Amino acid sequence: MTLTQLRYLLTIVKTGSFNKAAEQLYVSQPSLTNAVKELEKELGITLFYRSGRGVTLTGDGTEFLLYAKQLYGQYENIMEKYGRNGSHRKKFGVSTQHYSFAVKAFVDMAKQFDMSQYEFAIRETKTASVIRDVSTMKSEIGVLYLCDFNRKSMEKLLKSAGLEFHHLIDCQAYVYLWKGHPLAEERSICFEQLKDYPCLSFEQGDDSSFYLAEEILSTNEYARIIKANDRATMLNLMVGLNGYTLCSGIICEELNGSDYRTIPFEDDEKNHNSVMEIGYIVRRNTILSRIGGLYVEELKRCLGIA
Image 1 (cartoon, rainbow, N blue to C red):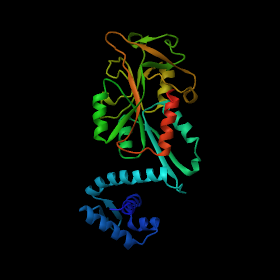
Image 2: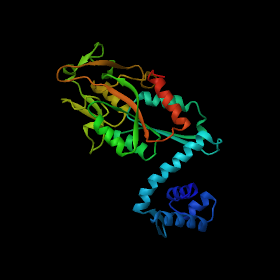
Image 3: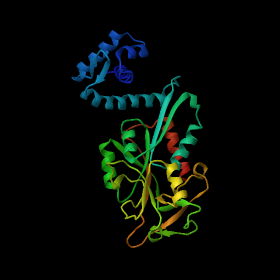
């Protein structure tokens, strides 16, 4: 098995056709077909179903594709770090829970590059999608948190996905609300004070569990709760309905504006505070690209730990 064969395979999957892949790779179709046949013979599996409409992956091909992407991606990372600069557009992606500091770090990282030469992507998304994106190499880095409640389940999920967690910072829970909220001037807020206001939570999908929640203290009983899919809607609900959410307290005013407040959450006997361990995830035993390394440095700077 060669890197050339893997590149051929990935191009065929991308184009859905041997003809189109051969054109894109500047090789003859017989050469491309022979390379795939040799790879299939070596692996002992059939990679593609062939028809007049093109090609589709077999079950074995779909499984092998994941490993091929990982292996070829590692090669590209090494070449990006040690090889000569190429003229092709380099790709870099981040998937994150809904953190403004993660977006700010991405902005500060992207400003250091000629963006016409790169294909950047940042995805604020569900917790399960953060894990899946990094596992399938859609994104190089994911940003999420662990706590005493979700740690065992999350570490199991990360291990099964071939990922590892890197600690950045520990945070206590804060109440996040807008400046016009009746509780906005409190020095601290306890759970009893929040009972008359809707708790805002990011939607995690129909099959989600408490362990995937982005908000700390997700197992508490909330009299009023509203689910939202994006950060802009969450902020609108804070203003329109005097809603609140529980977060890390790390807010980027440069992106979110100065109309919002973070106030320490005051725990009690029934509702204990908890530490949020914020960090980033990457595939196990991988070498961060140069862009990935710069992004992590910007994350640390935004969190005040650089």
